[in-house]
Amino acid sequence: MATSPSTWRTNARSFGRILLYQGDITRLDIDAIVNAANSSLLGGGGVDGAIHRAGGPEILEACRKLRAGHYGKGLRTGEAVITTGGRLPAQQVIHTVGPVWNGGHKQEPELLANCYRNSLLLAEKNELHSIAFSGISTGVYGYPKAEATVIAVREVRAFLDQHELPQEVVFVVFDEASFKLYEQELQ
Image (cartoon, rainbow, N blue to C red; front, side, top):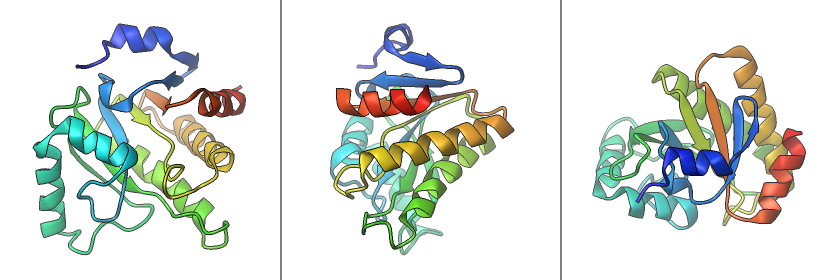
């Protein structure tokens, strides 16, 4: 069941074109949500698994078609692709592969920035008005949340300063500690 637009928006904190919301990204009625995918595109744990479960077999089928085509070896870190949202309230899912944290010495900051840039470019190309991100790479990939938050906010702000679409970007966090990190960075 979707969280109605008025409900989640009422509970979101606004920072201009950027919103901050604590809740379940799979329940947002929005143009697209961003999936912190693994390179196989075939589902996994964490947010990736939750999106695939909530979206149903349509998302997996769309990802299989991508794998059968141009992405036969999987999606490279920092790249982004778009599929249907399946049974999600979100119309589409943008899948991006974040970097695994290795101490910051293997281009992790640049790769993470590419995840945000490429997802936003894909949203613009597809004329999406609203997009939601969870914390890419901050789960099992181990990227430190504070550093990842700085990159996420910086990249989204820079993109929005130069582009009309998407009109709205939502950062969706699961816990209060992450909410505070984003809130501090957005102020």
